[in-house]
Length: 421
Image (cartoon, rainbow, N blue to C red; front, side, top):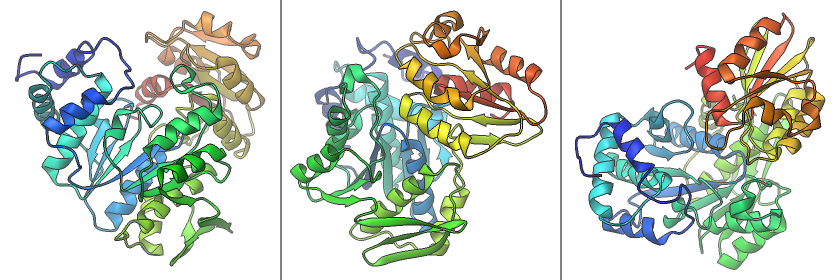
């Protein structure tokens, strides 16, 4: 790429073609470019967030808590829902096109003949923006796995593993133990390692201990306890109560918020939090597409659940939120997912399926998707998500609800079709 005057759209299109593979789990190339840019070690304190599910919510809590405590904070997440700029934010505001173009120009000048994947460009641009804006904290969300993810070129002051579930088998392995070992690779010697799920497979803590990290395990080294309509967080030297329920829906959000608090309060020096600051932070968090409820005569719920563990959380949340009428489930699921497992998990809370095509290399036409599970035998078919939305709107009556899920690529067009983004 030889033009310094490209638009952001031009840069993003060109980055798709630089490397021969969309995913390359090797760190040498991206680390070398980061070193040429003098991005390592990081110029600020860093918290890395890994896990099969729950990363986006946990990042959002970390950002909100840090801002409430008076710190400047950058966040790098993926994928985006609608606009690329969502991936790189400073103090809750999206990076501008001009900032991103400038960052990409610097990355391009530094890389010379080194090839980078799209995700690697994203990460390096984020680190450039964060350095330019002189943030005090950078929150980095792992894209895939942990040990060999590009984010892992940065030595984090604290790392959180939110959850372990079966996903990305081709890259991470077929067992929870193999996947857990990969995700635990973000931990560092003498740095904080937060294990957010009390039921996390043992290999995650084993790997953290092997690496010499300072382990904080949920419900052992720190506790979160439901109390009436709220909850309490407690760990050595910190006791926060009463706390209101997080604004994000679902029981798992208490674990995600607690993990964020545990990481921040364990840092040296710690981030100073009190119950008032925590309450303001966690009740103000909004993350589109994470059990996002749109109330009305027909309730709409948007959730990016795209694998079996996320479907289990979605099913639990739906069961805990009774509806008087039917539940229509508008689903678009990528072909490399365990579609039958997702369908089996959601079938008990679904009255009618509307299966939609996704226009993406890994997407499936609706008739192919329908053949992937016996639960889809009576499903209605729609060419794409907007068509599925229109079908649901024509079928649903007051008291019914419509759930859109299966992928970021399902929720993003739903947000647009419903006029929410």
